[in-house]
Image 1 (cartoon, helix red, strand yellow):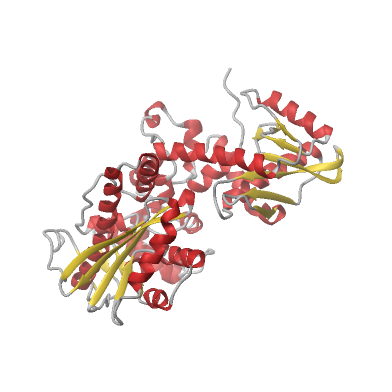
Image 2: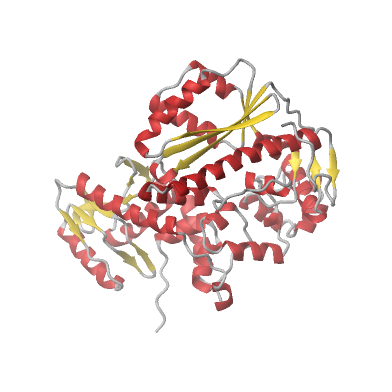
Length: 494
């Protein structure tokens, strides 16, 4: 007898990462199953850490209350019967209960009794989930909504609030009615998926980085030449374009942007123009300089990249490539354990205080500014840090506003590799660097730390390479066809 297919809270998380994830989990063919990515040791370790955090929260924050734990089994109906029995008794806190209605099944981490009328009596329950994150995410809210709808069906009352117990063991309230429209829309899509309808092609970074089915997403988009291949066109605009007959990259390369302007929410002339150029770039394998890039060469230029351990909200490496008088020097600021983060920060601030008046700092994407603000709040700042921040140039903003590459993604790894930069070491991405660093924390194996240092140095070398490329090849509006003039290298500033 085939196993019953339930809609679960996990489906909402998977859908937001990649709409094909819940589809392929149910309907992938044996051939497609071969392309499913194995989860890394780091991903599995973080799942185990999340379960440990959950147990710690329950033990520490609910120790003065009677917590009834429901043993979870493969028999959801039996688990639900035990949960319902506990709810009818009016138990204060229910841990690992199961909620069931038809083919919807939810397992909120906690159900907490609240005084108020319901079909149970003079009380009802609200859902609590424990997460190893510091801030609320959209999927947290949707999962709580899912539990709330199930609770309404079970207890005859919709709870007004749900709660997330976060990494800091703080209770974050979610007003559940606020998310109902989006919840209903995503639920409809998930129900279509469960009925066997494959979503339209989608190609986003989380399909590759988080979902195990990224290879299939990429293959589907490429085999159909779908407009999902266009960089920075979100699902709403993709669907609008498809409704208007623009389904392939070739369609987008020829579309009448004046005619399409304003015909659907999100379709505006500027965005359509950029999407059309992106389509033409992919179609022709052409690099297009939309706007000239003016990137001065100062007496001192610093290329800056931060390595963090997001599960622990911990920065462990500030890498700086210092370019001055034709010489490049790599300088890392390193915290070898979580407790050393403050010391690393102070060393970094002391160095920033020695910088001359005329310099610029080049980084790629917003992460560096975000983390500087986090650590400044945590440990304090300085006037020199303010100047450092004022001198920062986000090279990704330059790339996305002025350049068009025949690429699906404009992350540093994609762009820098396309123009000829190579990473030397065994660590090849941010997720892998987190895994390696967490392994280092457990083993203190210096070779692992050396791998991360090489990776970080290659990152700042990549921003320097890209900056020099912009100065050399993006000075004027033009387009480059294959063979590209930089294929055999080019004259660098340093």
